[in-house]
Amino acid sequence: MIKWITKLFTSRPQEENINNMKKYLIVGLGNIGAEYVNTRHNIGFKVLDFLAKKESLSFETVKLGSLAEYKFKGRTFFLLKPNTYMNLSGKAVKYWMDKENIPLENILVITDDLNLSFGTIRIKPKGSDGGHNGLKNINLVLNTQNYTRYRFGISDQFKKGQQVDYVLGEWTPEEEAKLPERLETSVEIIKTFGAAGLENTMTTFNGK
Image (cartoon, rainbow, N blue to C red):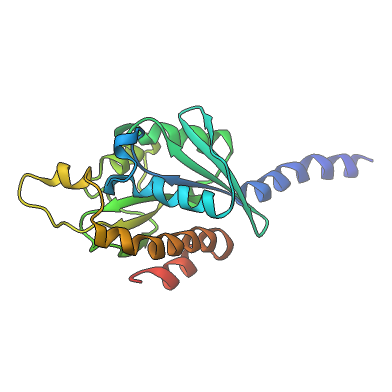
């Protein structure tokens, strides 16, 4: 009887840990408001909106953001669009990471990157903020740089002093025409991250 009780109480934490490892927090960075919807800086929101539409998911307004749940191959993906504005993204990430008991290695942050040509994919397990205010705040709040980020290239085709206008500007018609294919690839990146792991995701998609 004592052995059975001991097994019961020791197995529960193990089961919880296994279940937590099947949960993923996918964070799309962006700014709320109609004026930002189609801007380069909102590519994180755009990716999650594309996935939600493709899979007939609905976002719900929750604490510190909008959230949708996506089930795939026994995994649960929490798709989060923070409503804190870019500079305070870390607050939303930390809250939902703690609330759902999601381990750090199961977090994927989707962000724009000026240092990559348009549509270029770079997935990394850690790194500096690279001057990105959203990543800077996440690093500060989580007190670590060791979380996976998917950087989506937006290029740096702007004149000196016009970086902010460029980042907060809308896609060109040429970029708009190429976005659907890149968004499809982004959905596959999210699925692969959960189903096959980080290493396989980087091998399959980096540089594509």
